[in-house]
Image 1 (cartoon, one colour):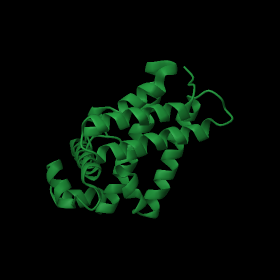
Image 2 (spheres, one colour; image 1 turned 90 degrees about the horizontal axis):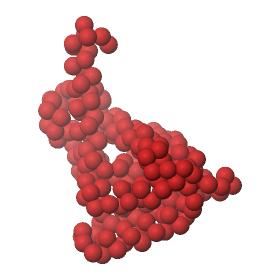
Image 3 (cartoon, one colour; image 1 turned 135 degrees about the vertical axis):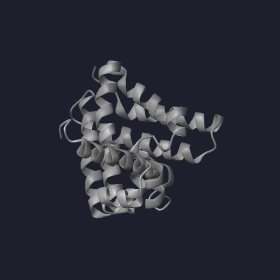
Length: 196
């Protein structure tokens, strides 16, 4: 696509707007809680434009799932680079922090969409399995000890994802903060020492 192709550029921009709206909508309201018309309205396009880009609500969910997990794949190495051997604690602090807990629409796809994938298509589950495997691989590569690093990575992720889900279901306040602290402690204990 070149600068001489404003129609192609506009099409890509519209697709990106619809995808962002779909991702926010699915994270915040779940698959059943948001419709094509609502996603289109949020993106500022017609329902026809939505269908032209994604074909169906299922197609949009698949692309939103990919985009959400890809964002985590991109962000994890940044935590390691920015925080060295303290990256698991920094990631847990971000992940369980009040800002991330409160922001369903822009929060992590791992927690927000896992339940939707469970009820989703075979394609959704295959994408989830593949991307989560890569995410666990990145986490494992940042932990000391090769023998059980992958198991500890899965434990670390599972504790954080499950913990965030429980905390989000609670009213915000001291109890949620206490649970977040306990989840953080358990996740870091399972992860063990990290590599810089």
